[in-house]
Length: 571
Image (cartoon, rainbow, N blue to C red; front, side, top):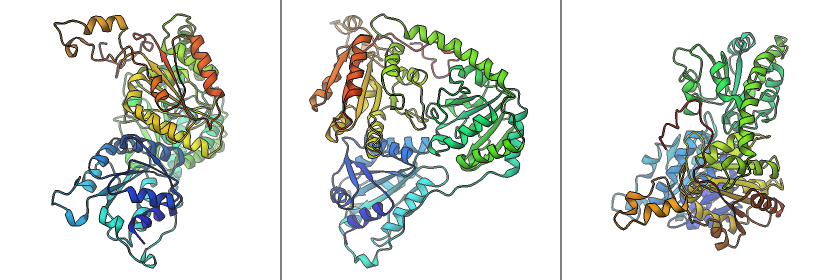
């Protein structure tokens, strides 16, 4: 049995259904062997996009997505997705071909210290010791990706190993790794946490993407109902409890964070997304209750604040908290005044946003665009959102009603993830027969990172609606007239005169869709956008992707922020 066939069967035995990759020496035969083993191979145009797609599949399924790369530069391109998955704590398995083992240190084709350099991003980076041991390494890689804090594994396969043979009877086949072990928090810590929440005057629950990945929605929804505590989702924690729930205070984020005296973190970290838990965004005396699968995370960035750490699987710990709350006969109505205070702040913010959405002027702004998206697309549409203002404004403009409904740049803030994420999500929507499209919502700069992956979406007829929101630049662009004034001087090179944030104002991104046989339209007004969205959503999910390119005001921006933190630029 050839090494590539052993590896393909070992992956299939571990439940792998998809491999995303770019083939070449020495992994072409492996891609064919994977198809022969019943694994669907999705050929991408760049290893970055392949690694992004595989990691998104891991997040959406709780099993590591697999990315296949060639040696040297192929693996280097995949480092982007490996770093992104590691930062987000998503399971990802990268399979890399490498130069023949008898050519090491001889200057072989694309020779590269792959296992050593991959270890910077991985929980496991290894090369199987023999053909017979390949299934052992594959099982260990899957188990390592899933267990504890999820993460990345890399397995390295020299070309001569993939083409070598051994008797099948000698191979050490292993059963499928079932699922990551579950664990409960210490009972005394659970009691302390519930009592702290019960006696708090202004408690708050923050729901992170770790809760979404952990499929903890049932327990967390019950906890919110029993306790009656307001909650705030992080960008990818949206939908674990629906955004239209009476206790959701996402529209009053600043008030909730700065006024809460006790905060329960469910699968969220006190990193830059939550301003490190520090004043002025948080109260100096706030009490933090952390629930996390990673014990090393407990107490991180709590500084001198009092905190309670609950180490365990979020779904199970949420159940413990509910049981303890019921034992205390928690009325669930003790925080109504606090909830109403936040709801009033939310209504004020929503009123201001609605005024911006309701403008009838052209060119459009971000809020006008997302109003049309919100009103026309089915409410459970999975959205991949990427870009600077596009991603940030859509977070508040597009509600989520189910868990894992929103994917974005995440903890690592990675640009270029959009098309790869959308491809993975669309494949799952087809597999699950949901009848839903995926919305890939990107700024023009973000789309440019992986625009050629549009061909992949067309090749596999994936139900993706690409919506490119074009402001002619990064954060902000410039108008056609301003661009012309900047670059037409005979005395000054455009590299000196052109604004660094500007992109070509005359770009027609919808023509990329035309190049691959997909429909694409260019719109400027609300009426045109509304018509295009209705046409897109009426298409069969088997008809393949389409693109809507909407031009907006190049000087449009999000609403002013109360704290500058990441928006300190003087643009």
